[in-house]
Image (cartoon, rainbow, N blue to C red; front, side):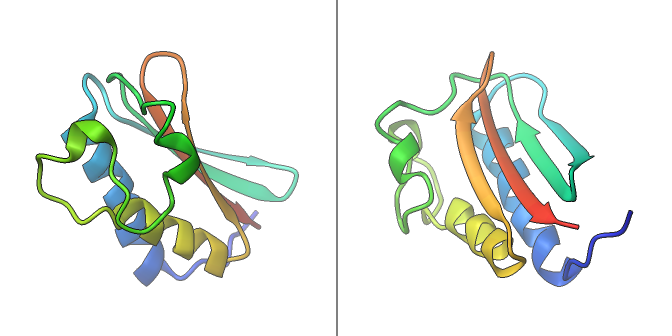
Length: 110
């Protein structure tokens, strides 16, 4: 199976997700990719406190940052950029709390 993705955009999108997990999460940061029914899913997870419930509905809004990150560097555009890259490829982006930490998944059609 192959995926038609512009790597010039996907690399920085994934880099943003990993940087967020390293900066705001705790423990191990994992990147997993799976293919199911014509969709490749790339998920970045950490073992930190996760997202606050009030942040999740706004996670992909411009300049929105989780409460815990307001004192750190960052523009609040990393998730927005990742979402835009997924959308430009005909896919989606999803943020959630999964088990022990945060998870952000990009789903792209194959």
